[in-house]
Amino acid sequence: MPPAEGGASPRLRWHRSLRWRLTLTLLGLLAVLLVLAGGAEYSLLRGAVISSRGQAMRVAFGDARQLVARQDRLRALDGRPPLSQRQQARELVGAIAAGQFSAVALSPGLVVVASAAPGGSTHPQPVTGVTVPLLPRSQLASVLRSGTRGQPTLLGQGSGERLAMAFAVDSRAGGSVGVVEVVQSAAAIQQELGRARLVLGLGTLGVLVLALLIGLWVTSRSLGRLERLTNAARRLGGGELSARSGLPPGGDEVAVLAGVFDQMAEAVEKTVAMREEATRQMRRFIADASHELRTPLTAIKGYLEVLERGAADDPQVLARALQVMSQEAERMRRLVTDLLALARADSSRSLELRPVDLAELLQDFLEERGADPATGPGGPLLAQADPEALLTVISNLQVNAERHGEGRGIAWALIRDGEMVGFSCSDQGPGISADDLPHIFERFYRAGESRSRDAGGSGLGLAIVKSLVEAQGGQVTASSGPSGGATFRVLLPAARAGGWVPPPA
Picture 1 (cartoon, rainbow, N blue to C red):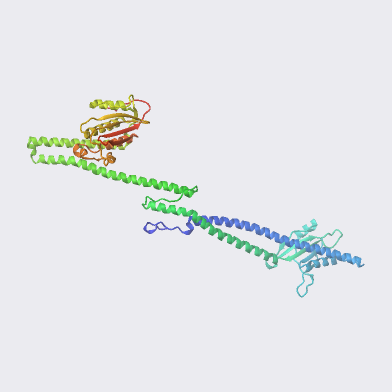
Picture 2: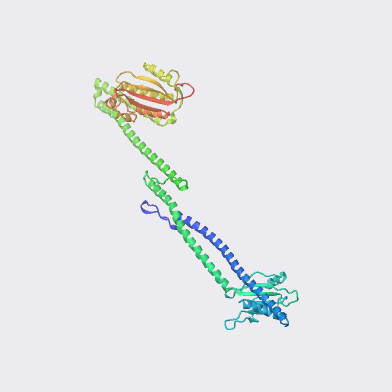
C-alpha cells in the first residue's frame, strides 16, 4: 500500500481491519458450532420422523394380523373351513394395503407369496399382485432368524424413495409366510425433513447475521479505544507532545496499554523539554563563554596593535600595556580553569567519593587563609564526597564572599541535618536581591553592580559550586537577610566510617 499523502496515516482495508478479523473469526467459529449443532439436531429429527413412521407401520401390521385372526375365528363359528395359508397371506397384505401401506408376504424361503398396494381414487380397494420394492435379502433373512422385526429403512432415491420395514411371522406351524414387508412412499418424510432443513438453515443464517451485527458493535466499542490511542500516538509522532489517550483507567489490556502510552508520552514530553532546555543553556553558555573570552582577547590584541605602531618605545606605555595584557591573560586563565572545573562537575564520573571529615578539611582551609575557625558541632563530621571537589566548592564560596562582602568578616559554620552534613558560608555584604536570588547559580549570571565583570569574576564560580555539590548527591541553597548579607548552605550525604583522605599531590 503506498504511503498516504500529506503525512496522514493510510486507511486499513476492511479485510485487514482488526475489528473485521476478530468479528469474522468469531463468526466462523459460531458458524461451525451452529452447523454441528444443526446437523446433530437434524439427525435426531430425521431419526424421530422415521421412527414415528415405523411406529405407524407396526400398528398397521398388528391391526392386519388381528383382522385376519378374527376372520378365521368367525369362519370357525360359522362352520366354514379356515382360510388357507395363501389366502391368509393375501388377506394380510390386503389389510395392510387398506391402511395406505404397500405390503409383500414372503415365504420362509424368501419367495414372494402375495403383494398388495393401496388403490386409487377410482378403485379404492387394495390392488393385489403388484411389484413392491424389497429390502436386501440379508436383512430379510436376519429378521426371519430373529423372529422379531427390523428397523425402518429407506430404499431408492429421489421421487422413488420408499420407507420399508420387515416383520417376522410365526411359521412354526408350517405356514407359507415367514416375513411381511411393509412399504410406504418417503415423499411425506422428505417434505417434512425439507421443511426442517429450511428452518434450520434460515435460523442459522439469521443467527449469523445477528451475531455479525452484535460482533461489529461490540468490537467497535472495544476497539474504539484503540482508535483513540492510535490518534493520540499519531499526534505525538507529529510533534504534539501534550497528546494523551484520555482513556479512563481499567483492568483490561487496552486500558493497561493506554496507561503505559500516557506514561511514555509524559516521559517523552519531559525528555524533549529537558533536551530543549539543555540546548538553550548550551547555546547561552557558548555565547557567554565566547563573549567572556572575546573581551580579554580584544584587549590583548588592541594593546599589541598599539605596541606594533611604535608605542613600545615609550617605557611607561610599554609597562602599562604589559600589565593590562598580563591581567587579561590571567583573567582568561581563570575562565578556562573554571570551564574545565564545570566540565568536570557535569561529568560526575571523574569524581571519587569517599568518607571526608568536613571539620578537618574546612579547618585546614581556613588556617591557610588566616581566617576564623568554623563554628558548629564538634568532633568528626563525615561526608561521602570527593575531597578535591569539596576544596573547589569551599574556595569558590570564600572567593565569592571576599569579593562581595565589602571587606567585612566571613563566617563559616558546620551543619548536621539528619542524614546530611555540611557547612555554610555567610558574608556581611549588601546581600542578594529577591529578583536575582533564583538565578544566582546560573552560569555567567551577575547580579547588581557589585557583581559586574569589572569585579574580576567570570560568573562561573557559583555555577561550579552547584554542579559539584549536586554531582556528589548534595544540595546547595542561597539566602539573603533583610538587613543584607548572603548565606550559602551546602549539605552532603553523611558517611558512616573512615576519615578524610587528603587529595593526591
